[in-house]
Amino acid sequence: MELYSKRACELIELIRKKDISCVEVVQSFLNRIKEKDGSIGAFLYLDEEESIKEAKKNQESINKGNELGKLAGIPIGIKDNISVENMQTSCASKILEGYKSPYDATVIENIRKESGIIIGKTNMDELGLGSSNENSSVKSVKNPWNLNKVSGGSSGGSAAAVSSMEVPLAIGSETGGSVRQPASFCGVVGIKPTYGRVSRYGVVSFGSSLDQVGAFGKDVRDCALLTEVISGVDSKDSTSVNIPKKNYSENLNKDLRGIKIGVPKEVFNDLDSTVRNSFEESIKVLKENGAEIRYCSLSLNEYALATYYIISSAEVSSNLSRFDGIRFGRKAENYSNLEELYVNSRTEGFGEEVKRRIMLGTYVLSKGYKDEYYRKALKVRTLIKREFENIFKEVHTIILPTTSGVAFNLGEKRNNPMSMYLSDIYTVPANLAGIPAISVPCGFINGLPIGIQFLSNYFNEEMLFNLAYSYEQSTKWHNINPQL
Ligand code: GLN
Image (tube, rainbow, N blue to C red):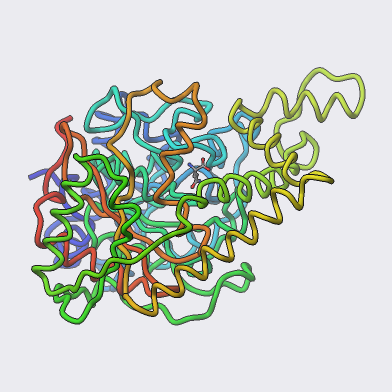
């Protein structure tokens, strides 16, 4: 069995026992990337030399009898909106072309402290805006299960890289589902932690009140391990919260006795029959593992998508104003006055979807419309939060499909933004409320993977990992790999 086909936790154990070396591990994944990424397009940047150097350093340390950190020399792919010192941070946008980060984001510092190796930067929808990865200004990411399908977005590069075994672990980010939706489309595990659980320092902002860094792994234990490494309070991010994190990967528990799972009846009634079947099957598995199922009502779910697109567009239009060709971002070559410099830099630097959101966001924030749209959306957001808080008085978790269907064809929704936005329908509620949610593979429809997600109360990631683990260990989905 090739090293690249093993899970991060297995590799770590083998490295610790000195059965394999850190260099062999990194080399195996580098070879895999070289062999497969031409057809997938998950990576935008690869740091071969530095990765091998790091691996050698780690191995020397092991040979001297030292203990490595929790990630023990495992290579990790990082979404290209997260700053890694001396690597590009392009956000797959022309506006940041050629930009190299002068410092490490806090999540990267945390990974390095635990001996993780940053192997390169993964592809994404431009600046995080999108659900299919087709908005990357460089190339679209193809779905490893079917190269004619999208990988999901915006963290499609990270999801596809893990799914195709180009890396055992990857980091993504979420504003409205960008970890969970591609995790579902690519058949891997992905988590969006509670807002405040992971530092956003060094992450290029999209919607600051929604953004959160998340982890991808092939299975729940791997995803739990990376999550515990990146979590924690950070003095550089005032929205990070000092609530002790646990060693999620060490305390996984299959037994669900005493756990109450809420199934929102509105959602259940809306599902198309194929998704509904796998959803019903999943519920059965959870019951067999001891959980009690209770029907609940997410009555405000129908407003979540509109609320999300108003708030996130408002915030992104403001956040992206810094990319003006002077303070940040590539400067246009041709201009005759200051205004033209701004206009030309932004016109040339931003893609179509980014411009659409800037216009939408500016509109909902403008005088006369702010109360009607932006303020109203903030109120609905509070109601959505309260609805979740009330449900969590009755149940420990809510289960939802991650997506309403499997990965769609490349090009299918490109010219129809509304139908593209609809693919976030089940993921955005967790972002609006700020609660954690995890997606885990729950089956296949026409040869393509699909996921279910668990949502829980604030800072209860431990509950999510246990539920997802219990479900995963009773099913076979996580053991099936795409044939590439
Ligand atoms: N697809 C959503 C959007 O385009 C979510 C993106 C994200 O989570 N970064 O806004």
